[in-house]
Image (cartoon, rainbow, N blue to C red):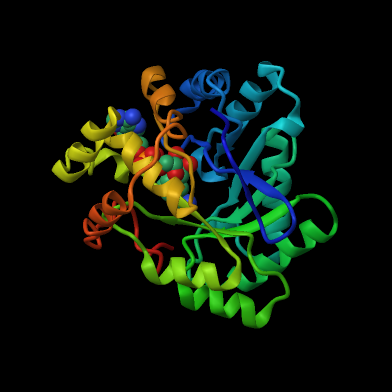
Length: 272
Ligand code: NAD
């Protein structure tokens, strides 16, 4: 089944399902990405901080799929925030990947550094100069988004945030909807921590699917972009089989009721 494209506010679009490579060691990355591409994934989510941009680029070069059929995101690391540093960090990521990413994100707002407005101006410049098609942010809280909107000229195409049934991020999703920002969900499976939830088990059984597929399907029906991570070929395949069934309104409501403010990662206000 085909992976839908989600329109972005800059006139481009992004494949709704991707493959995330956080915590995949560099030596295993090319193999995992090759497997994902073989199974039909066309969108890879990496970051300078993951230390595997070079291996992502190698796997893409080796796959022989035309570059324009693939979508690659990478991210600006915290220590590289600031206008000129961001421009240099972008060049370093291009060098590692072997091509420009389709989407470049500020990885964390790091309010303690107070450099994200300057960094955003650098990303705007990269976009204006045609060096990157789309620009966005990650882990921005409503206050950080409000400041960008007030002080700069371009609304981020996406905000990539921790989001799963145990952390449903209602306030941010409403803000995104109001301003035309696409929600990307990181740790869409809460790193596996919610897969034993009995409510998800019941829904999975009703559809002949796994709990992971049910959670990913919930994201898809909410309109989120997702990029689950796995190095296990059977799971990489399983995580893509989410476009051939549909959750009912009652099932969506049952998942909505699982919300419990549970984070698997850092709180954005605390990350430096
Ligand atoms: P995830 O929710 O995708 O969970 C991955 C883990 O879940 C795997 O390691 C495995 O243990 C388990 N799993 C995966 N598929 C499974 C299946 N079908 N059945 C059973 N278990 C399964 O968590 P993640 O890796 O943290 O997030 C996904 C991607 O999000 C990352 O690779 C990265 O690209 C992105 N991310 C971004 C940020 C950010 O700050 N922007 C932070 C974390 C992750």
